Amino acid sequence: MSVGILLITHDDVGTSLLESLRRMLGKNLPLQVKALSIRHENDPLAFCYHAEIFCKYLNKGGGVLVLTDLFGATPCNIACSLIAHYRVRIVAGVNLPMLIKVMNYATLDLDTLANKALSGGCQGILDVNSVLGD
Image (cartoon, rainbow, N blue to C red; front, top):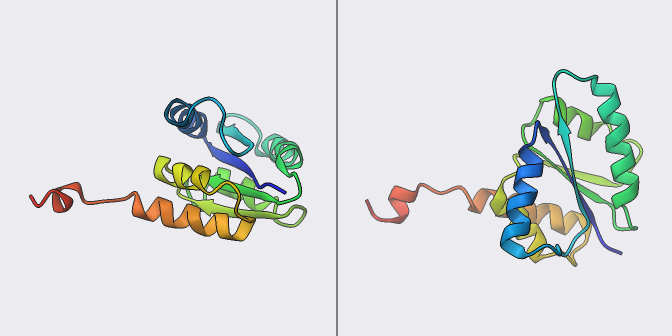
């Protein structure tokens, strides 16, 4: 059983992150990943439908880790609509270090993978001046 990854973000944030990830790690990612771009000019209910379709497609028995860009915004609210019907864990604040961490632990279960996403996202945020001793 593997965990699927669904990015639900404003505009093309998720798509751009996935493109960067593919360039870094190669075209074959260790996990099944999809991005859903939410555009404010469209009906959010239509995006709920697409999120459900992606969730069904990505769930191979281990559940789906849903990564969103901003807690409380439309993409996160759409992700939250999945909780009642699907085995999902949702993490807000997606960034490239988070995705890299998740891909490096592709064999973990859903809950552990969600924790890896959280740690990767937080550890990827640094005060570079302090790190360089400036």
